[in-house]
Image (cartoon, rainbow, N blue to C red; front, top):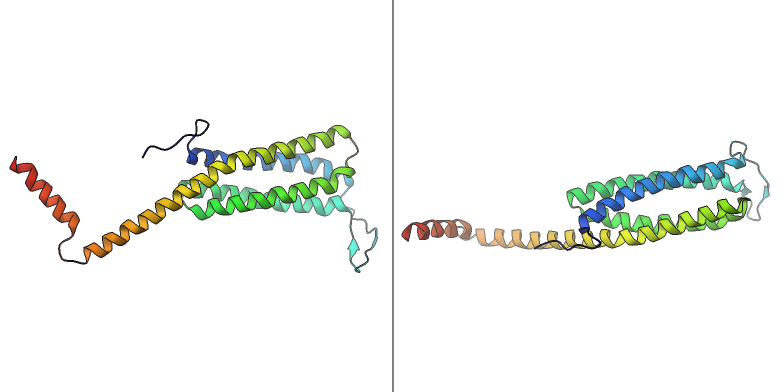
Length: 192
């Protein structure tokens, strides 16, 4: 069966490019956000007040920067696992990537909304929103390839299990059909 092409790419090629895109976009996002969130001097965490529930309310950008760094590390790790999973045809890695990207972008949208008023320069706000929207749209585009390739791998694994199951059942009766058919074709070839 000839593989289908969408936008000139097979599902496997699109999945591999999705992983590469996510790694590069995450590194660029980390560099950009770190520059503008670290300006609030995160080394000196200021305790503003006690919250109503007794917990300390710390400076927002400092813990947000830690969340961004942590989720970026996880995203790069999962994207690397996506590349391996696409190569080794492990559909669970593709499913894990799909689920993680959904949470990753949801967290980034929440962070963007929380820190939008902290950035005073309007152009920087516009660039941050443009980068977020562009990345979300590109992830939606690449998800089509990842989900399609995960379905292809899953169907192939199920068919492979069915074929090997039938082969095991049929091998239980004396002479195997594979050997019989090969002997028959060998004899048939020399009869003519």
